[in-house]
Amino acid sequence: MAWNALYYYLTIVVIAFGSIPKGYDEGGFAGAKGMQSFLSDFGMTKDQWTGSAAALADRKANISSLGVLGAAIGSILALGLTDRVGRLRTWQIFCVVNMSGLLVTVLSSGILGLMLASRIWSGLGAGGLTVVAPLYLSEIAPARSRGMVVSIYMVVLLTVLMLGFFISYGANKSMASTPAQYRIVIAVPLIPVGLALLASFFLKDTPRWLASKDRHEEALAVLARLRGKSATHPQVEKEFAEIDSQIQDRQQVLSGISIWNIAREIATIPTYRKRFLLGAIMQTVAQWSGGNGITYYIPEIFRYAGVDGENQSLVTSGAYGAVKLVMTMVFTWGLVDVFGRRRCFMTGLFLQCITHVYMAVYMALWKDSGNKPASDAAIASVFVYATGWSIGLCTVQYLYGTEIYPTRIRSVCYATNMMIHWFFQFAVVRTTPNMFQSLDIWGAYVFWACVCATGLVVLGLWAPETNGIPMERMYELFDGPWYMGWKAKVDLTKDADTAYLEVQEKRSVHRAESKDTARTAGEKA
Image (cartoon, rainbow, N blue to C red; front, side, top):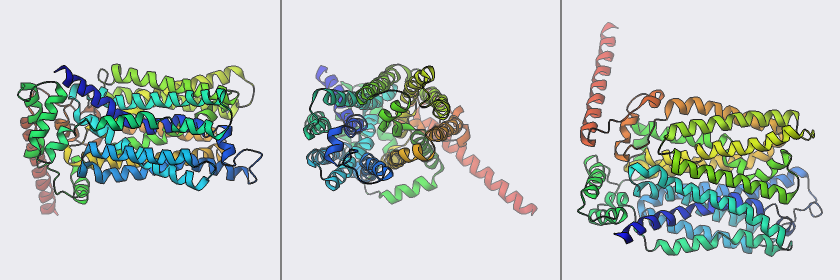
């Protein structure tokens, strides 16, 4: 049994390592692309560049954003793979894709076209992993600790993001400014991702996916191993019965069901549609509130706030990553399963909003003014923003995206949500430099503050509290109007079958009343 417990923790860690490509791209690569060795190798230093400043800004933006564009495409590809070949095999495929693309990036010295193509290719793997890794974790975690388990994905991501900035700083300070300098920085994630890929061949796919493919005996054995108990243990039997009941009794079997049929069901079945739209709106608000776009340009933002020098900016950026990591760990192991998802993301959005407001005022009135107190407050506000982002939508979006959907539509909905995530992140990363230029920096912060304020209202009304709710009972939270989601509750004293029958009865009564109302109106007319 001790080995089985170790197997469970090993599974979580290995799958959570799927967040390394995304995290290191936002930290290590973001730092490496600003090094003089990188700029010189690709002809972008002041002495080498002969074009306009706008053209140089476009090239730098393309280098940053094409990896994100590839990730958006990867999330679409994950849509067709996760159900077809399984969560584990999909995870392994995207690891290989990311590593091969990253290797080409390392070896593309001075060849811009090859480097840009490799950015898209490695992004395919990173984007696919953002779909399948949280999905896998959500399907192996017990309901009581699902939030913590899925959030470990973000803990690993932010740890790597932070280390990426410090690795860039260390290389910038201790190594000669040659191509080897930035190549080593970019190549670092090949080691942990490669080790995780090797370890993954000792793992099994999730019990929910196996059961959905009618591999029930294998699914039960895997569930028992994950829980560290025998297959005949009452807790294991009860949990598996809930999984199997949802899949069998409610026609959740995925075999032979096309993606287009599932998409049609999502569009036509109200409870599916409400859940899908909530996930999409949450991703939209998360990215257009500043989100990961700010992380990609955090060294520049610190310089705007008054931090001088390339090395100092990298150190401050590393501290920014450390704050995100610490707050995400606090969120993971203290807040999310104690205070709940709603309180966390509402508090986080509020903190983001007020820091955007201050940064807008600072950039409009005091930027480059030599006002030290205002500059210090601006730097502090960036760290407050990191706190709000980390305890809010940075992590909560992954939780809602993996836990509110039934097995039948989960992978399609989550993959689509992550596609939205990546396309919007691509748009934010690509347009942020242009927003800073055309809106005098402060205008970008006004825009982000407005998005946060809108998100507070819309998500505050729509998103129900999912903490502690079994995934097989999530439908009960979405039985009423969308704007009453904040009041939705699940009576956990009732068993799942009784609750399901009551919901179906209410829907039947509601449909009958609607028909009577329509018939009465027709008779009066």
